[in-house]
Length: 95
Image (cartoon, rainbow, N blue to C red; front, side, top):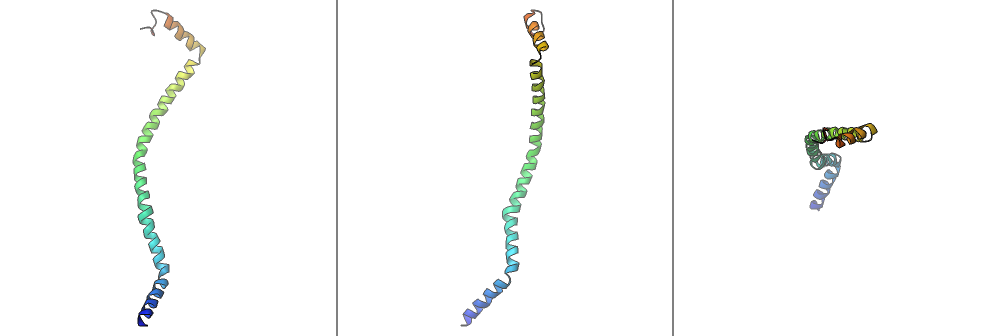
């Protein structure tokens, strides 16, 4: 009988302290399983940001150049000048 009383008392003590242990357990779980990996991923992404910014700048410059070429290719005057310079044996585009 004494053993069951000790078990009951221990059970009550665990239940009485549950409002303390549950948040502590939840905080530990968040810290170990959620916060640490999230911070590691944040650091990794921050280091990759500069690489992506450089790539974006390079691609933006290339797009600007291609837009200018496309605009020139759709201009009839430019196309005629280009055609004439290709036909001219002394033209700059022939060399």
